[in-house]
Amino acid sequence: MGMKKALTGNYAVSYAVKLARPDVIAAYPITPQTSIVEKLSEMIENGELDSVMIRVESEHSALAACFGAAVAGARVFTATSSQGLLYMHEVVHWASRARIPMVMAIVSRTINAPWNIWPDHSDFMDQRDAGWVMSYAMDNQEALDLVLQAFKISEDPSVYLPVMVGLEGFILGHTTMPVDIPDESMVREWLGPRRQGYIIDGSTPLAVGGLTMPEDTEYIFYGIQEAMNEAKKVIKEVTNEYNKLFGRKYSGLIECFHCSDAKYITISIGAWSGDLMEAVEKLRSEGYPIGSIRIRYYRPFPMEDIWEVIRSSKGVLVYDRSISFGSYGPIFTDLAGGLLTYTRNPPYVSNIVAGIAGVNVTAEDFYKLTKEFIDEVEKNGQPPGFKWVMIRR
Amino acid sequence: MSIRVTPPKTGQPPLTRPDIGVAGKTGFWRTTKPIVDQSKCTRCYQCEIFCPVNVIRVEPETGVKIDYDYCKGCGVCADVCPVNAISMVEEVK
Image (cartoon, rainbow over all chains, first blue to last red; front, side, top):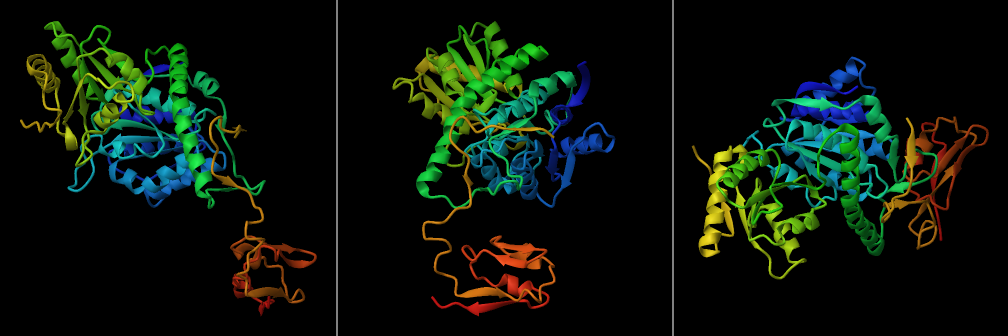
């Protein structure tokens, strides 16, 4: 039977991993991720979980160990944050380009220097071109659910790509909420045994990642792009299955809030979307025709789904909690580029970058910024296209 | 541990199988060739373990077997052999 527990976001991830029963876990401690693998090693220690925990000397080695084990046929898991993720970046690409299914939790924390352990989305967004399926949770329940779904999506033959699940450090990672833990035997039956595209176990001579000529390499990379497109379908199927089996109400790649009759749409990802929804609710009560989209899966980028919602809207405001220095927020960049593949006459799109390095953005701030945007569009149609809002109290 | 291996539906993984290269078996870069004195061999397996291209097999009955089609002539086997049973002989082509 499933049960309810009061769990931090990190522990919610640990419980999801426990249900998925990986053969191998390799990790290196880093704030704010550490309590995920601490909990997992505790579970292994007291016999609740039958996994091999490999203690390594770095994050690069952690993912490399997972990669090796996964190539040999093991279901694997690791988790990291910030500098650790940057350090393992090389192997991040290895896993996806070798089409190896695996799951990694990213407990977001901004990037040094200067030393700072507070959350924004910089570390997660930094991986966007790596070929991983990328999802981001809004609350602890979703962190658990996304990790479980990640194993299923990753091991689908139409996908066979690694999946990373993001959640903000501290805001979710170290904050306790009631979390519903699904029934173990139901999860086991739903998830099934490990599936992967090939296995190197020494029985047949086979090498992964050997020197390959340009044309063949290009073809292999094209396969990743195709798998990403397939992943959109698989994610929706898996979400629906999961909803039915475990009584949830997720809606696939994006989550809509008051969208159906909205003339203005905000777009965001992660925990602060909850604050944004509060602001949207308040604006609604004041008669503003506004709705919000929360991105659940950032890669593959849900352009079709977003387009269906915003095609007839008047203005779209994208909130990014990370910045590509010298450019814009990554979600805005994806959206603005993607829009032009659908229409040459897009709705007015603006980008606000805020909450960088863990600066707190409240529902009140979202209310003020969003209201300002709508008022300006209504008045002169030309609010600033890009704004980095530094909130100070 | 049960694993289902099914090929990906889209694209292909970057896998390679051992085969003869486009330049022929081992190319033309080998200048010295490992020759084994089987009478000295103690079957310690060091050459098999250390061979970087995995062309050496030590048979308990017959001794060291080297696949010269793929041997690059690097000399690691001769170097690690504790009883000096392998010598690198200059190869004239």
